[in-house]
Amino acid sequence: MSKFIVGVTGGIGSGKSTVAGLFAELGAGVVDTDAISHQLTAPGGAAIPAIREKFGEAFINEDGSLNRTALRDHVFNHPPARKQLEAIMHGRIRDTVVAALEAAAQPYVLLVVPLLIEVGSYRPLLSRVLVVDCEEDLQIKRALARRDMSLQAVHAIMAAQTDRKTRLRVADDVIENNGDLKSLESVIRTMDRQYRAMAAEAH
Ligand code: ATP
Image (cartoon, rainbow, N blue to C red; front, side, top):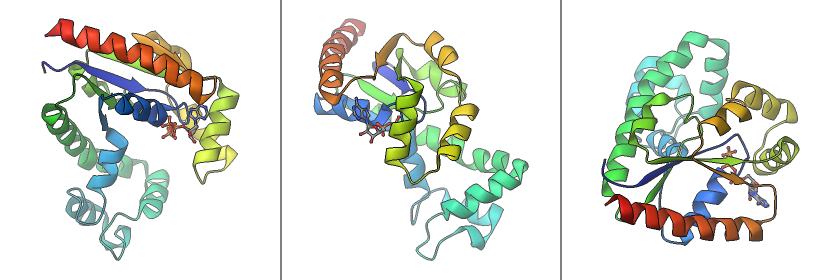
């Protein structure tokens, strides 16, 4: 793809959405795989018929959306079901991502992929990889503040995710999100100028 696309990743609660939102305020495009996944499983979503067929009506809410809690529990207790769910979701998410990237008219686009390192298929689309990193105690605090989740669940997710070192190794750019929002905004203003220059040069 000829567009300048920056892949954004980072652990749970590291600040990926906050970072993407601040770039968007400055005029960058944002495509978010989590948001796309939610759209696909909302009422009338494109993944719902396949989920209904594979897993049954018990996993669909009355309004036609995915019953996330039921499916999460099921997948947790039946490992092969995870593969089936991934087979339904991955291709659909990727197709939607590619269409959104192609439609984007901004000078550059951020593609937010929490599992960028685990799911290798996004890498060929990217001009650069931006990792949002923060100290683990802060990450836990922020993850807990945002979600209805126990400390134990946050620890379990962190243990299952790629470790910080591996993530940092693939980064072209790193945002150290250990300060307040003001200092984050200032870092992002500088990076926005750099990405605009890189995107202009790439054309
Ligand atoms: P997840 O992986 O859970 O989707 P995320 O990486 O997208 O999370 P955010 O949702 O952006 O992370 O941030 C987690 C929480 O931390 C949010 O409540 C956000 O407002 C807060 N936060 C992020 N960065 C900062 C910061 N620099 N200062 C203060 N609060 C912050």
